Length: 186
Image (cartoon, rainbow, N blue to C red):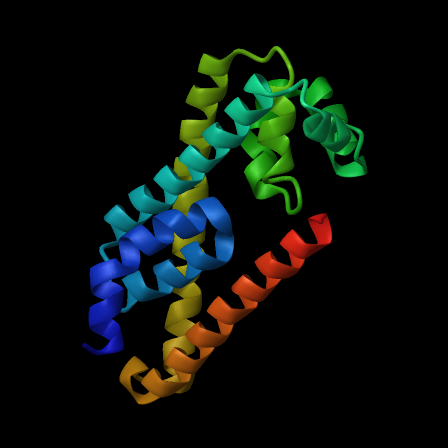
């Protein structure tokens, strides 16, 4: 099985999961693959939006359900959390819509919103719309960058071995990062 077959077979679920975990980069790579015809653009947008939506809903309900846990109270005392909360207090609806577009606020924001009394149904509705717009934007950006990449480097098949090495290195870096983070918590 070549790399294009792998992307076609597993690309949509990978982007959906990647949108939960990492976000923009995974979705942009998916957009580049859609531009090359390896993934369907509309299904890609739906997969990315679904992953983003579900991840943010999970963080929101984590904040809502366990807002009194010491670990979340400690998070609430952090600088990033306080910054998110100040912006939220000024324009709650706009903040709910826009937090995913602000670097560094994507994970802490839905937790912070969940710790407030902001209506869950309203959060869900705004989150769904914002997820779709976010997915469309980053799939489109990925498509444009993918076109430029192809113009510079040529066909993907010529770089299969390099891409396999880069994918293995990225997986190793993520695993190392998670291990270091886990050890640091101990």
